[in-house]
Amino acid sequence: MMLPSHLTHLNIAPVVAELRGLRLSSLAQRQRLDRPPRLPSRAVLADIIEGLATVLYPNRLGSGEQTDEGIDYYVGHTLDAKLRLLMGQIQRERRYSAEQAGTLDPDHDTLREQSMNLVQSFVKTLPKVRALLDTDLQAAYEGDPAARSIDEVLVCYPGIAAIINHRLAHELYALGLPLIARMIAEIAHSVTGIDIHPGAQIGPSFFIDHGTGVVIGETTVIGERVRLYQAVTLGAKRFPTDESGMLLKGHARHPIVEDDVVVYAGATVLGRITIGRGSTIGGNVWLTRSVPPGSNITQAQARQELFIHGAGI
Image (cartoon, rainbow, N blue to C red; front, side, top):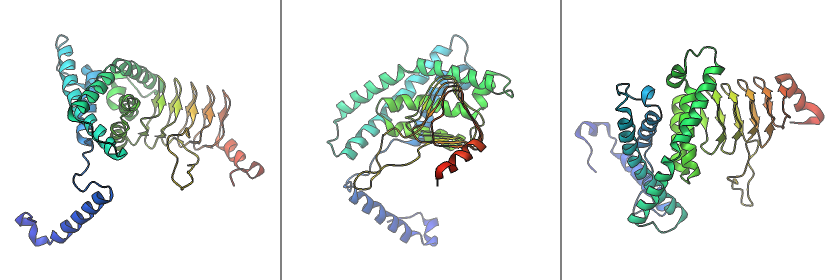
């Protein structure tokens, strides 16, 4: 094992050797001693998503130097380049998924064809994504008195950055690419502090104001014209397990939030409950029961609920 000469005096060789041993042991346990997994690249996916955002909004998120005549060329060129990168990342996920399932790796031609078909299906969703994002931008502009323009909302608001990633990630998730979708969601999470699982179903005109600390779980269903504030959690109340004690995955465990609901800062809404249309959930409320349409839930009401007949104890 050779190390750069300027590092030898730090005596890191034993650490490097120990890390190698742990690496090989981990691979052996997963029966991959011959080849480490080639996962999709977070850096490449970040580049892809940034490029796709400029494709959706070339005048405002692009370089700003395109002429009217050149915009279509810019969009087409950028889209082609980013989709080629995406196809490579899809091939990685498909191969990794086959390894995880213990099935035979698809041959190169089959993998390429599958990936190309998925990319083709994904690109067809982009007009729908753009239309949804336009409603989100309008909702943010109308919902925040500090917003001076829709352009400001697009380039400045963390909630919009997170929902751009989510709208794109959700389409990939629906196409059977959960790893890539989750990585895209986590890119937004690391930048904005907003954690939206790509499986969450979110209707049009969605607005997250301020946003830091917002968590939206995998099976959450959000209707139209919903507004959330910072530190809101739409989460699971409990995690059922099977006979062996392993967590059951994929079952509906997060809230349904109907149209025209507002959830204020710090509220925690848990379990497969329904927040009825037009309801308002106050700040710092802890809510684990469904509420009918038009409800106005405050912290005092929620606290009262906890102690009726020993509930919550």
